[in-house]
Amino acid sequence: MELALYFSMIIVSAVLITLVVLQARSLGMANRDTSSIYRTRRGLEKTMHQATIVLSVVFLMLALITSLPIF
Image 1 (cartoon, rainbow, N blue to C red):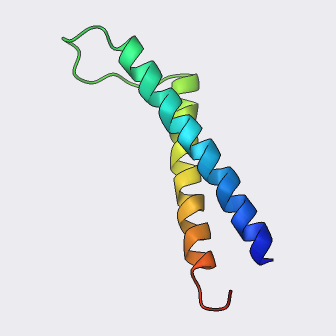
Image 2 (tube, helix red, strand yellow; image 1 turned 135 degrees about the vertical axis):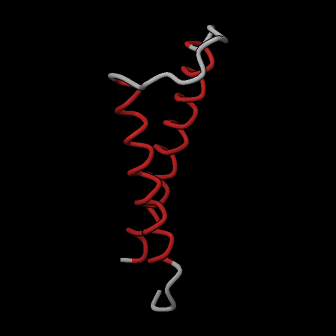
Image 3 (tube, one colour; image 1 turned 180 degrees about the horizontal axis):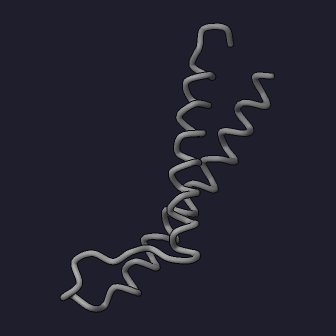
């Protein structure tokens, strides 16, 4: 059980890092217009944003579970 939690934390953290790097790269390249202050996310960008939020919550829960004194 403990080993499965550690493996899932590694997988979730790798995917979370990948999503954050991809968002930072696409945001810098897509936002060449300096006059626009706010831009709505659409399509794949919105999906990546929502997946990042969900995976960060999952990572937080896994970290809290593995830090319990039972393991």
